[in-house]
Amino acid sequence: MIIFFVLPLLLTVVWSVFERTMFWMEPAFTFFSYENFFFSSRLENFLSSMFHSSISVVCAFFIGFPIAIFIRRRVRKVAQHRVMLLFILPFMVSEIIRIFALRPILSRNGVVNSFLMDMNLIDSPFSIFVFTPTGVVIGEIVSFLPFMIFSTFLALEAIPNYIFEVCADLGVNRRRMFKDIFLPLAAPGLFAGSVFIFVNGIGIALIPTILGGPGSVNAGLIATQAIIALDFPLAMAVSAIMMFTLMGLLYLGHRLFNLTKLLEPIS
Amino acid sequence: MKKNNAIELKNLIKTYGDVYALNDVDLNISDGEYFVLLGPSGGGKTTLLRSIGGFIRPDSGSVVIKGKNVNNLPPDKRPTSMVFQGFALFPHMNVAQNIGYGLKLQSIEKNIIDEKVNKMMDLVGLTGLHNRKPHELSGGQQQRVQLARALILENDVLLLDEPLSALDAQLRKDMCIELKRLQKTVGISFVHVTHNQEEAMSVADRIAIIADGKMIEEGTPQEIYNKPKKQFTAEFLGEKNILIGKIHNLNKSKIVLDINNDKIEIANNNYDVSKNQEVSVSIKSESIQIKKNVKSKTNEKNSIVGKVTEITFLGQFVRYLVLLSNDQEIQVRSSEEVVNVKLNDQVILNWKLDDFILHNE
Image 1 (tube, rainbow over the protein chains, first blue to last red):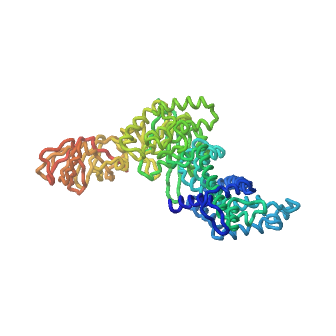
Image 2: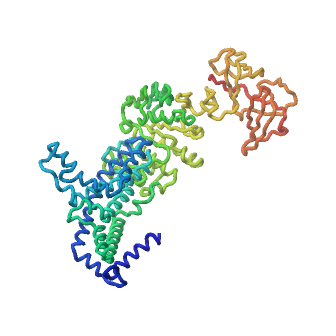
Image 3: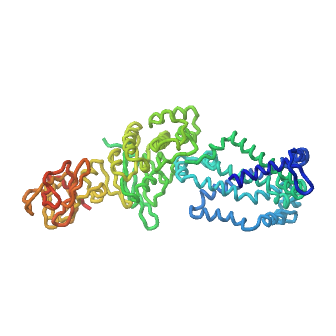
């Protein structure tokens, strides 16, 4: 825990206040890198990447959670894990290829646009699907949706069957079932899935690199670019800011929703 | 006074593949009656209960509750509530929320729900535990919450599916008394499934023995325990002394049985049997007297000779195993050790004429 978690985090923070040299960095105590981050367009990019990640989280919730509920309730018990395995299949292909494959699908002359055109649903092809922040959001949903499904399914799987029988006896309708049963009981899974998608949304440089246009940059990409520019303290500063943002969000979530209560084992 | 039937089941059949879970079951349960379905595991009693509750659709037959055929109604549309096996509570809701949830679904005003929940919590003995979560409650308390959750809906029938199976023995005894009291207080019919005969005897007004998807027999606890009509019932209730024999002779008051050439007499309680019919009889081990004998024959009435093969001290009583001349074994329970009866002694067993019960099947 200390070697693999605390130490790297500490080093990230320590290095972020070092001074930049031509090819490396030397020990110092300066907030130059932080200034560099906060007083440039990088801050704006960072905030917008948080915004886009949030959208991805919400979309993944609305797509992934119903899928997980469907598998829990409508698929036979013996087949449930096999169905879940289907969602692992995409991971057999490298992430770069998976995301790159979205380009021909989403582009102006891509599969989606041709289909919509052929069905006479639109007159001219949509160009917002790719090389835009929308493209990044779509890419994030495609990449991370399985994680939302996995984590919520695991939480739903832990719900004992008698709950559904009690609901049948009391006459709980679908809306109530969702609100009173699934949502609270799957909350730990929803939370885990959301955090995962959010963190990857702001941290993974690959998706905006491939699917994003000139304006869509996330924190991971900023850090990557800083490393390419051999500005290691800046890269460290961006990483540290990401870390603190996440910790801040977790703390906020904890204050608002009492995470310990949310995550306490359901017995 | 004849009571109205709360539940009438006619020709209920349910199969799973080739297995009959319910094989043509007819059953009537009266209003305000505490009815117990007793039987071995896998005998179909839970299937029967779930058919009444609407969780299982029988293949054929009808379920009538309060004079209304409910065959095609889902569980929530039937005038029944269910207490499930194990601790079936909503883990994320506290006690009051669990109990009031059924009412909340009916969009009843909050202060009315609160009032009813309070009343119900007092009734089942949960006063003051409103804000506890299920995992903070003991097993007995959790079952009380389930009871309250079911009773608060004020349905005509409460179905209990092995409600006490997860509790320890002492708690089970206490809860039995509690359940009986509760049933008398609310006055509705309880249908209780269990495989535990002690539990069944202590709560039931009437008991039905269910096995292999069939109703073996029904009656009051006294009838079932003291005068079981079927051999299966006697065996299921733990009767060890079951003898098989042929009817040698019979008249209005007596039946003479031939058990491997030993003749024994039993009282004829209007049994529907005929001469030379093969029947089984049983006798309670506490009804037999044991005494030492030196001869290998006995001329006394209502008696038989045997050899003691085992003597076990069991606290409240002493158990003797006696091997009869025809290789059948008889258990005798005596409240105190019989002086001078030792292992391998020849003994005479005596009983009263009407201690033996005859079983048709």
